[in-house]
Amino acid sequence: MTLYAACAFEPDGVEVQLSDGSLLEIPAQLVHFDNDRGDALQGVWMQPELDGPLGAVVVLHGNGGLFTEPDRDDTKLEVAPQFADWSAMLTRRGYAVLLPSSYYSRGFWEWDDAPRDLDEVDRLVLRTHDAYGALRFVCSEQAVDCDRIALLGFSNGASATLMSMQDDLELLPRTAGLTPAAQRERFIEAHAFYPGCGLQGLLDDSPYFPTAPLRVYHAAFDPLLEHCPSRQAESSAEAQRRGVEDPMTVRVYDGADHGFDSSPDNQAELDAQDDARERALAALATALDP
Image (cartoon, rainbow, N blue to C red; front, side, top):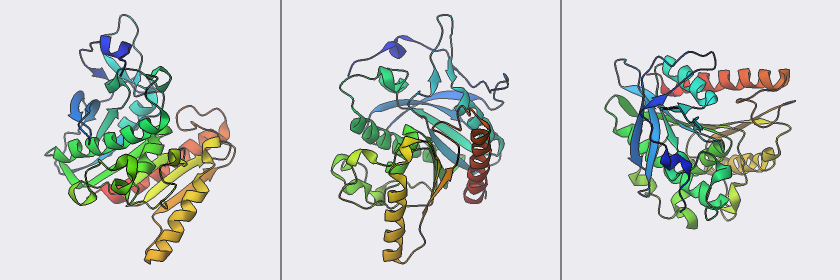
């Protein structure tokens, strides 16, 4: 794989600057770990100094990447504003947070700069392995309760979130190398902001059914919404067949388009951002608080 400019950048740390210009109060560390298939990854780890065990959230970035591309004089990696703000919201509630960097770890800042030999199917498979490598890292931290870890994704990271939560994931041809479900840690729930639900055709022979509660927040004007209603229908039908409650919900915001959580452009998108964040944080509190 071709390595890009990120690999020439040698940071002396990581900075989490909030949208109001302040810095995150919780120290942020650049950490190294392997994904589920042994690829080397880097990510940003934040752990509140509270009596444990703590709940935790793994956050998957979108196609813009985790970090803002540095200027010539920068010495630190800077987390992109959306993820800096989410880090603040989560750590202030007492959760540890890991933000794995699927792109920087592989030598590029954003998807548009990805090597030509890495296609969209590869990306989804790699990021699924990344999610479970991140889960294993978080679970190994002494201060974290391994039974209280959630997954949160945005855009392509949200698509990877959907893929990661698929019930028979290790039985699919492209993810057959994933650690078997009985041997790997589990996310207690997941939240996906405006994912693509087509999942690159990887589930064409298998109905979609999440292993735990999955909440999708989408936008009426977003073309990525296309396959999400059918995924919800699959999940509902499978839940009925199993005699269990449907774990998947999809909320669609009128007047909103893709990226409303990152850069809302109108009042409808501001309202969508506020409502989706409030719902996600409330659900996380129910799942992660002791």
